[in-house]
Image (cartoon, rainbow, N blue to C red; front, side, top):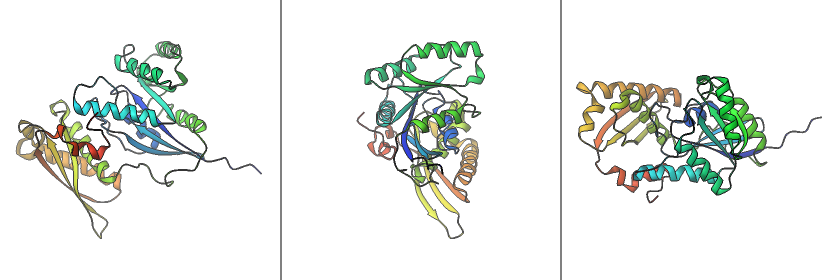
Length: 302
């Protein structure tokens, strides 16, 4: 009679430069959409934890903000949150966009930071479908020479190629111990915050480069009804009055499209009917308001 394998549980931090594909990878590893995925860099603002089961192991993946050279208060708080997530994790996965032309400054900075702290990591070379194999092998050899990585994985977070192998390998190397979350729980992010992220993603995708970077979305009210549906009221905060017209669109056409997209995503996520109400307000100094940082676990003083 074979022995039941001992349960394992641990935290794995996903770190990398902005737009390396960490949020896409988190969603693929967990098998559900938890983190914003857009063409725009630096859209993940705080650590988002996704929970996956691999055999007898519960893996808590931490999608950190991209690590880059910060210039503003919000950016400093984001980078501080990323390094904090890396320090607290049992294992680290550095994600690198293999389609890039050479090693970028942000990834080099991350590797230097890991070396300074004495941390080792696994490397995931992402977007392998966009690079020819000889160049991919050359890139892998270059990273291997750094002496920093225990394992190197070649993956496509978008297609899922190689993601299962990465998850299985991590599961074998996490510490033995009891699971920290119920088996069917996919994230520890409060639903109000997750709902706000869905709408923020809809804004990015619908407005593209018209969108001012400095906006935020907050869920102000959540009402559950007896028929199983839910009413959500959210406020989109902008820094400038001029940005309001961009978000609203002519005759309110843009905000209607954004609401429709966000509502459809929320209904798929929550598996229930959603009545979404959006309000657009200008709050000029929201980037300097500590209350805007607290819900995301960002340190205003970073």
